[in-house]
Image (cartoon, rainbow, N blue to C red; front, side, top):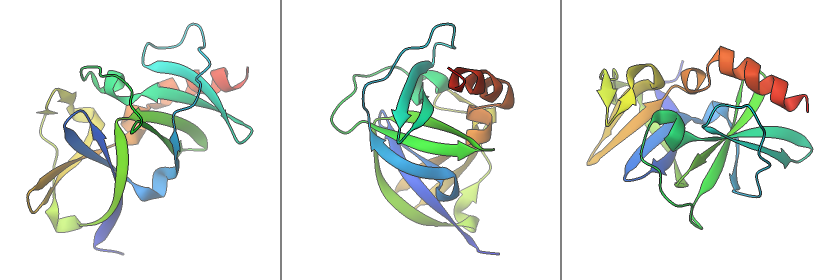
Length: 153
C-alpha cells in the first residue's frame, strides 16, 4: 500500500481543493451545457462528452460557496463514481500532487462554509492548505440515482 495519494488540485474562489486522481477521467473546457428540467439547482444540465451524456454540477453551488463568473480558466473535472460519470465545474484545475498520507489531517466540522460530510481531510503542504473533498458524498447515492434518470433522456 502506498504512503501517498495522487491528487488533482483545483481552485474554487481563493481556496485550493483536491480529489484523488483515481476518480478523475478527464479535465475538460466548459462547453455548451443543455439544461434539464426538474433537477437540483446545482445541476447545470448535461453535455455530450464523446458520446456519453454527462451531468454537469456547479461545485461551488453544491458546496454552498459564493458564485463567481466563469472564465477562460474554468474547467469541468469529469469524475467516475460507481459507474456514473459526472462533471464538476471548477474555477481552474492545474496541478497533480503526490500527498504524503501523514500530511493529511481529519476534516474539521466546517471549513470555510463547506459541510463536514463533503470533506475527506485537510492536507498541510509547506505554505499551502489543500481541502480534500469526498466526491462520494458530494454526489451522494440518492442524487446519483436522480442523475442516472437524467442520462436516460
